Image (tube, rainbow, N blue to C red; front, top):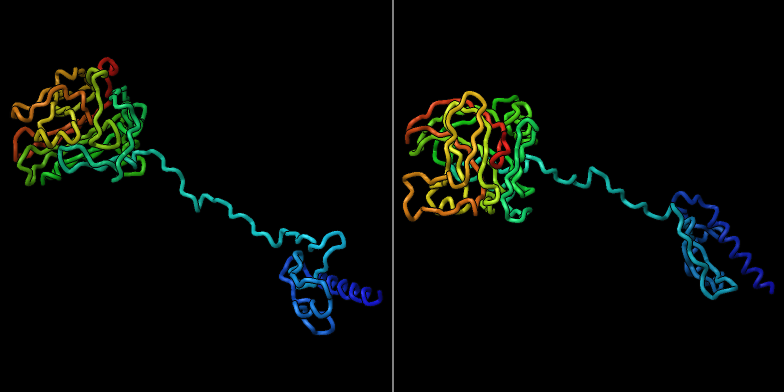
Length: 332
């Protein structure tokens, strides 16, 4: 009995020594019998039946004795000082969702073909394959024309740089259209797309040109059936005639860019014109092999081109403003 009491007393002293440490900082090794450090060997020699462990509250070494009600050691409790706090997800480490802004719109095309997509990855189809042309009114300050596809309809511009031309298009607004908001500041300031052009042929063997347009989807090559829209209406002003062209995606190259078009005559005052799809015709120089039928059934884009009158000849300069685009009847 005296031996057991002695052993229990020794164990109590050891545990008291361990618990006396500051539980907010790493515990220093507890000592017993003078300067002897508590080790597994110490527990085995001085506290029979005990197990060497580190106190869960203090981190100090100790000889733990099984409880009377169980042969197992008392469970080790975890304190807040020994638990690692979860890492908070902060806005500085997690990227913000990409806003669909006109900064995601395709860059200007170097030729009369439609521009490349904003992303090199294939764009997912966000429509049902039907070109549902709706009203775009520049006074609303929106840079997206309703097309029936949530990723499409964003205005872009292009020049004849790809054909070695030197023509330029300049926006008549404080913003140059290259900000993160794209053409939204231009449209907001102008109540539409307003700009000026300078048609310089450079080494271009064709007529100098610049233009603006929008695609059915984000991809310049994704086509849709626009039959249900029946045609297009436009409200505009322009110092020269505008060639309103149907972009047919990958088929453009196959037909030698003999795209169906209509002509919007020059107009110094706001003018509204409407055309059915049947009124779009290919240029007279198109060969029989380049002929397309029912192009509205595979429409990829609509493009407004400002071009010179003669090949290899400068075409002068001027201003334009596009205020509304939609299906027939919507611009009035």
